[in-house]
Image (cartoon, rainbow, N blue to C red; front, side, top):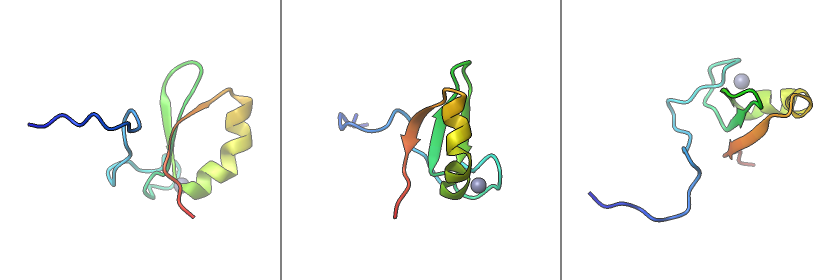
Length: 66
Ligand SMILES: [Zn+2]
C-alpha cells in the first residue's frame, strides 16, 4: 500500500458525508469550540455561517465549489 504524502485536508469529505440539516452531500465541516463537528451542504453552511461564527466554530474542511 502506498502512503500519500500530499497535503490534504485532515479528513476529506466523501459522498457518505451528509449535511446534518438536509442530508444533501456535505461540502463543509465545522468544529465547535466545545468539540464535536457538524457537516453542512453549501446552502446550509451559508445560511448558518453567521451563527457558527458567533459560536466560535472553526472550518475544518471547505470543499464548496462555484
Ligand atoms: Zn443542507
